[in-house]
Length: 630
Ligand SMILES: [Fe+2]
Ligand SMILES: [Fe+2]
Picture 1 (tube, rainbow, N blue to C red):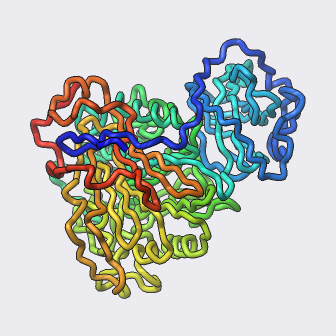
Picture 2: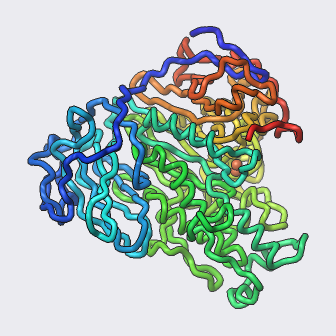
Picture 3: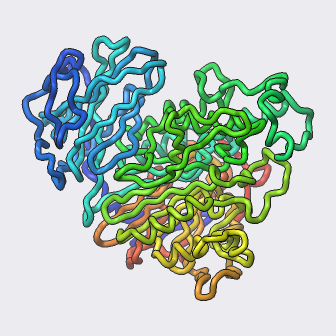
């Protein structure tokens, strides 16, 4: 590896090898290729057993190349199509045999048919030998979700959305791709990003242009899966406006009063909540329609070729403690919007997860989803890896972790995964035979700052009081991670890149994807010289020499294969920021899309080392005179 160079924050600019980039082929926007009118065709035999690839369609062509539905096909021609989505398509909940394709609808009555198969034409513009889904209609203008099932295992599929306005005609999208579950022993990669915070625009932590550059890097690399870590859909401006409109300045919200406000009293408020995140984002105030805008403007740029998997953060305010009182609507509508616009997993034969139903409380309604499932935590395997996402926010009864909604002090043991999620996590980790285990959550304990520094406390570390406050829990969460050999725990919330290791578990803070301050927020909470462990004996081994910190912005591209795990920190920059460098933080060698730091598990000689980064923490937040380009 070439010697790295350093900016004032010590950014490593030597690039690590990119082991997994497939051949990129620039696909053209579709224009006039021959199309079968899905509305008039008949059944096609899909790759696999064709469970739902039937209905109103005729064969798009004679035979699928993926006609062997017994699984283990392993079909992948290695082609990467980089095509925009014309109909805003989001892939979700992929399994060994299925995937969900969510398409934004313009109006009620519009329909979608999906053409899909495993083989492309020579010019890469058409699917050869494909099948087609039944037509699915939008009843009320909500997104259309087409579930493709009966697919070949461990295979790459190409697909094309055919949009039928009013159920007529055909507006075909470009060809995109997805993957079914990888087989053990195969190599693949996934992406993970930290907090987006689009509500912090106007040079407070978010640049739309920079976030789009990050999405473009994801689109280029096309990981099978892409995890978000929360604080992507803040609705707090809506809540703040609601508070201002209905309560005097400085009003102290208490859980014992507003947290249990009866619906009849709520109805007397001068300006109760409107349904902000469900209305059109164009005419709505900023922050409204957050869930819709995020896919319209950003996630839709890359999630047509990568399955999107969400994790809740504290700013989503999708919190159990908000239910049954003045903030009930905000939390329930956040849950509704999340499930409406993003196809997320529920427990089934492939995924495990939150099987409990969110019930109405104190006379307020619960969610719109008739199954009552929050789809907020889930686990599955992919290749040699177990993936686990966690959510303390829907399971902390007494406290909204890291929330300013209520003035009551946050009780020390208030934030929790809850008994049910803990039991599921323990079973999931202990029963998994996967070589690698990755866990994702917004933050250790759901609150505070740092990772190694705070894995020692509360239910994570098992400090004194653990037995009394978590009766029935066999061991604290960090100990569970260490005992089951969790490879990496990914968290956001702190807005920087930071890697630490405790008892062999890597705690990886993931940078923001669109922060044009390029600042290492909260770096003072990371890389402590030691940690104060008061949990079970034999744990708490921390080596500060393994810790590394770097500033925003970008995402992590993580490859998994028989040789191990490889983590690339892909940094993104706007040209204007590199050219003008208003805060004198760049070396002049930075390039958008570069790998700023790379490491492996187990370690390899080619890894970047912490000593490569001559990092000096400039403080928890930028000084008041930090300069931003327009
Ligand atoms: Fe955040
Ligand atoms: Fe956060």
